[in-house]
Amino acid sequence: MNKDTFAYELMDEFRKFKHLTRPNHKENLLEHAEFLVMMVIMRNNDEFGTDISPSQISDEIGFSRSSLTPLLNSLEEKGYITRRLSREDKRMFKLEVTEKYKQIHLEAIEKHCEKFYLLIEYLGEKDAKDLVRIIKKANKFFSENEGNMINEKTK
Image 1 (cartoon, rainbow, N blue to C red):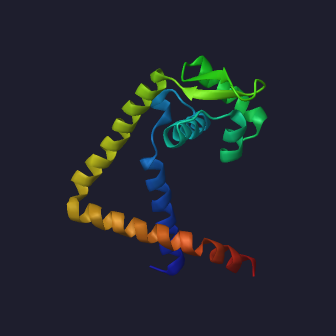
Image 2: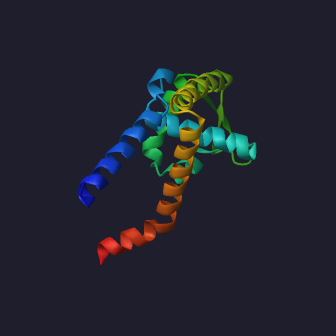
Image 3: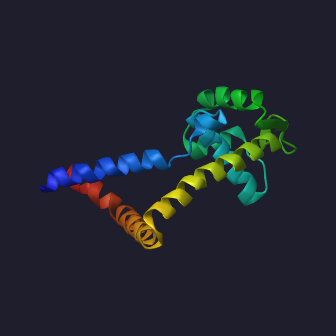
């Protein structure tokens, strides 16, 4: 197999694997953009124990405020978030995840993890550990060389 064919095959398998290992947001009645917003809100609540403002979400995921507003409205209508006025600045509001969404999220995580339990069972412990080792090695390579690979292309 020549180098280009092998590189394309590897890229295609990475693409398929990435697609297959993504959580299925549709099962949880969320669009992908809504899911990203919920992940930011939940991570902020979990890591910092505080609520987050829409502008902080915009900054973190790169959505404009105008594109974020309909997403927040939809999430609020579904009962997944609540908005409340900020105590510090009455012109601002903070976002909180509701118990309804926390339950849906837990169920989705359990369902998503089940795919990986089945994969481990299918591969066997040795191959599963080898897969983790190889993926870590590939991630390390890409994170250490990303800037170099981009610079090589522009020469």
